[in-house]
Each structure stands twice: as structure tokens, then as C-alpha cells.
Length: 275
Image (cartoon, rainbow, N blue to C red; front, side):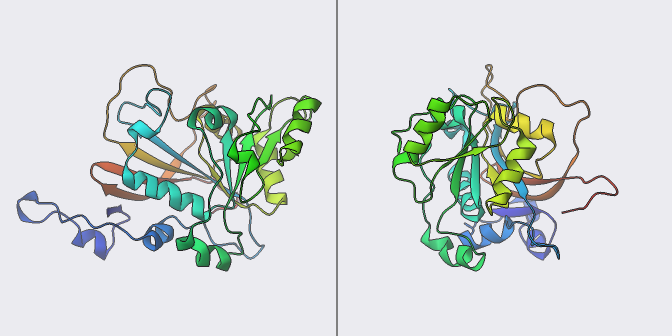
């Protein structure tokens, strides 16, 4: 792993030397990764919600291969994935992604225990599933054996029998919309009201598209995989396009084995409170 941006003394030290030879790769420790991906420190007014997304894409824009993200991932990508989870209060994920990726509960990581305790966090982040229809398998470990009770974000018009089934399974149902679906801004506020201000979403593309369209995404952590898949795979964000493209600025860029690990932060408009 080497840092390409921002440029520091270490970046210069990692620059290829005479003849273009690249320096020997060094695996970063989990503490180094956690420092590199740390959430913003709370301001004078206390913590405010910060929603980041973590996604992976191939060179030709595919977010999946054969319906899953794992084939286009990398061992270091998975270390970043685990680090981002370990820093979060809650992981927000769409119901379709839960079904496709066979989601399991987040686990406690001894390597991050002291860091989480210092931040006032529990042993592991909660998983929050965004679902209008609550078409979920409540016999899965995500509901039967989570370390932290799983949250289900849904609308006020959700079927009462499905809401009851979720609650019987041990999930906490959170209403975040007036109709059948979930309002992204309301979901962020509802999670913050529960004390979850360090928010992480892992998609899928439909959910990420909704978050982008609602203007609630603060940061994108994007792994660019040096692969080409062709085909008709989804992009990292789907759904209707926004009226005006949203501008994000590069925060950091890491590289290993041809994979690029980028962080982009939302550019705040003048007059709005910044990060």
C-alpha cells in the first residue's frame, strides 16, 4: 500500500526511483488504515451525521460481476471494507444487497476494540436494512444472532404483518417515510436520533442512487478495480439521474497491486456548514 494523495514526505519516499522501479510494497497496519479513513471530529455543537459510502467498480464501470461484488474485489479492498465497518456506528444496506450478498451480522474486532471504546461506540456496528416491502428472511443470522440488534428502515405504509414478523425476529423497525418507501434524509435523521452519527452504506446501487439524489451523501470511498468485465452489470449508483451533477473533491488516494482506493468528499456550497 502506498499513498498517492495528498502528497506528504512519505508520498515522496514512495515515488518510483531511477529507471521507474516501484518501491517494495508494504502492508499497512489496521491502525494506519483506521487513521487514514477516520470520520471527521465533532464540531463545537457536538456530533452531526456523516454518511459515507463504500463501493467497488471495475475500469469499465461495473459494480458487480455475476451479481456480486466479491469477484472484482481484492484482499486489501476487504481490509479497507473491514476497517470502514469497524469505524462506523451503523452500516446501512439495501434489502436486495442483503439477499444477493448473503449479509451476516457485523462482528466485534479485537483490533479495533480500544478505538471503538474511546469513541464511545459498542463492540460492533449495527446493520440497518432499507426495505419498503420487508421481503426478508428473518431466519438468517442477521436477525437470529446479531451482536447488536438489526435495524429495519421502512415506511409508515409497510405491511403490518411484515413489521410484526421483523419485530418477532428481534429487529428494531424504524419508520423513515410517510409512504411505503424510505425517505433518505429522514432515515439519516432517524439513525442520528438513535445515536448513530458515523454512518456507512455499502449500497447496493439502487440505494446509493437514492442517497445521491437526496443529497445526503457526504463521502464516497471508491475502490477502482483494474479489471474489465463488459456485459450489462450495474454501476455503483442507479436510478434516475440528478438534475445537476454533484461535485465531490478528492480527499485521499491509496494504491496497491493496481487497485486504487479513493476518498471523495462532497463539495459544500458557499454559505453551508462544511465538514
